[in-house]
Length: 295
Ligand SMILES: [Zn+2]
Ligand SMILES: [Zn+2]
Image: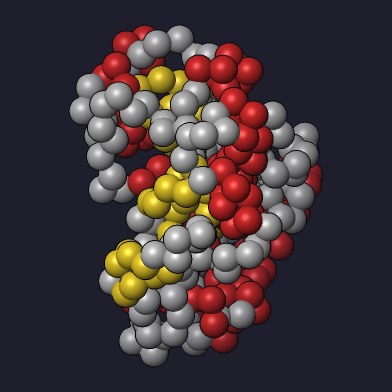
């Protein structure tokens, strides 16, 4: 599959042939945010008269299909749903980035593969895949299903420090073991609080066996998992239960990266009877963290 596609362009090379109507698909939010910043700067200089795509991303799920004021001097309103794209002038886009039009808008040059679900990209629009060599197959198959012709697909290298300036720590076996032990301890407490009795309590070597079985990949997005990491690094491993009514027992867990694991928590939150009507933005980071620790 990799060979069937054009060669991977370096970042500078990519920016040169990129057009504002193109869509960049990434796997990580940090990559997306960094790429968008870069592309907007390039857009202002090179395409001052081309419109800027804005993504509508209201986090209030109750606000679907309502008339939304579109940023810009015309004060028009449109009926929008989450992830709809509107276009505005470069000046208006700058105002949006400066926070003058509320929090429901983001640049729409790039999105994660998961939020691009259901989108069809029409020729001659291009879809650029950020090729960071770790999650190639998943990403490509998803990207291919977004286009009409293969010629619309192109790939490029990730922006430098694509993980939001989180330095990648060197692997150290002793530290990795300590990190696993610390997480297992937290899961044990959470399980106990929920009254799970586990006969097959997870041990460090079970986690290591899983790591081998999954070839050190996140079971959802397929990136390489980190075992030594800065606390905020979302590439770190996370041990997630398969059946939520059971505890963290052998045979009932899989490994996800922290980003996927958080997405899963948010999904559970939205589907749970007690919380499904609470807008996600009303849920505090602490609440989310508690829930995260408990499921
Ligand atoms: Zn993942
Ligand atoms: Zn348990």
